[in-house]
Length: 158
Length: 158
DNA sequence: GCATGTTATTAGGGTACCTAATTAGATGGC
DNA sequence: GCCATCTAATTAGGTACCCTAATAACATGC
Image (tube, rainbow over all chains, first blue to last red; front, side, top):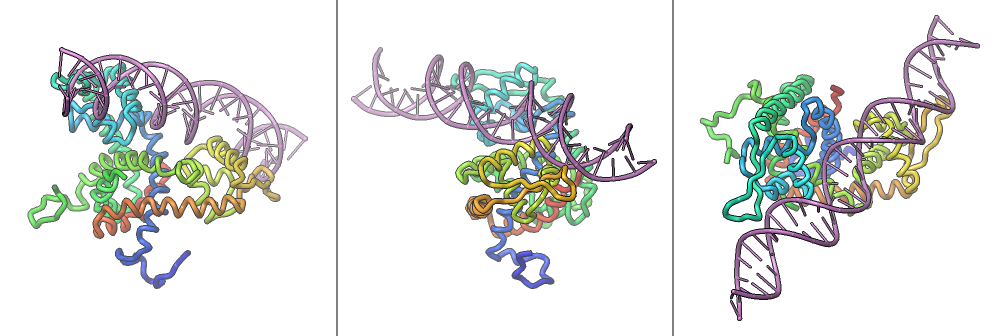
């Protein structure tokens, strides 16, 4: 294609300037396409796109505030309010005012929410595992080794 | 945290059954969060989320049909029709009937579309490069080595 | 030449975001 | 104590993006 390195070099050196350009061109396309595939994998679980990350976040961090959840999921506060309101009327979470700072609303899973969170996570792991079966062992390993770096990349607030 | 691999590091071998589970839990969360960050990086370019991948696809493959674009971007045909219709009225693409199979509509960039595609791609690469500056060299390398596997993962039609 | 499949579009609807404005509570002078 | 100012959350209103179902136009095989 736009080859300039030696033909038998399958992986350019990581110090090359072309690496950021490669990543900038290819990774966002991968993101949007994989994201659209993922969209179809949520509905069968009975959980939608906005709710799922909140459920799993609350498994790890019960009592998070609405602001904290919005920041973590990279959405604005009103968007998270809407998600939480829906989840509350679905019986998945309960909201409780903070005693020390009464502006804050702390969110926690109900028993039903906790069960659904675990079930949804398991279902999604299964969906993902089925896809991983189409990859070679070394491809899975490569993705696995990149996970920490990708998580780091997400946390950068530009 | 767990950022280094010490000798007694209990990190599971790549053949472990826990690897697919790890990926299934963490990668989709990364995808949705990074996707939402990316969303904000499109508007300043004057191109929206649905249009961008089409523009870059057409750079590489002029004369693609609407169906081909829809398949590649993992959306349904009517969704792609709407994107192309909008892009046509924006003067970014032109549609031309295929002479051999007159059901098909072939799509190609206009000169304006081509300029915008190149500018948008450059802008996004710059946006991405700014983020990559916050990562270590080895983290960038890890993501770079996983790119091919991720692209392969996207192409699987479940 | 007619049944069947494929390509593209139109119509209608739903989800997931956003900004701007409002309410309620905290905080720091004075 | 009281006011200016900041922050947390919500409400209201709007937009972007994607879907299913139905329809029109063309291709293909028997």
